[in-house]
Image (cartoon, rainbow, N blue to C red):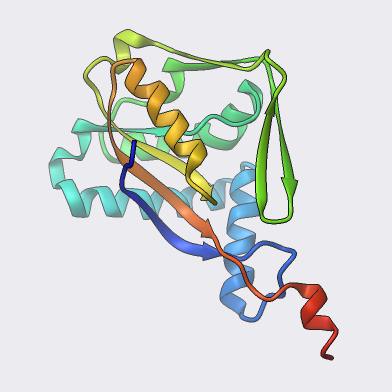
Length: 186
């Protein structure tokens, strides 16, 4: 599947030198969102709601935002519940959170520019197929690097009967000057 993906910001990973205040602000937004902080969730919800109302107007309630699963059900709920509630209320959408369960746990391994997800075989995402059947959905995640996670999730949603329209992200990972190479010229 080759779906349309939109990000609002560029995210420069910590291993690269921050060369502007904007880089620091985006990093903090991503860290705070991942930590489940309400101010970051509200900021992200504002971005998404404004975009949906811009695109669809009063028809934005015909679409459902579905957050990409985290490493466990507890982490998924911690990171996305408040955000999903705000977006669903402001767009008069059904909240998809109560229609997804994550069983088990997966580990994310972060090595340099690669994001490797390691599944020990116990991780499984369960969908309420009655809810997703024929539903127009837009995938959401805080950060995209390659888009593979969103593409895989889109495939699972389609298998559950959803019509995936695209994916929205707070930021996309980009590369910069590594701190190591930057520091050697000081």
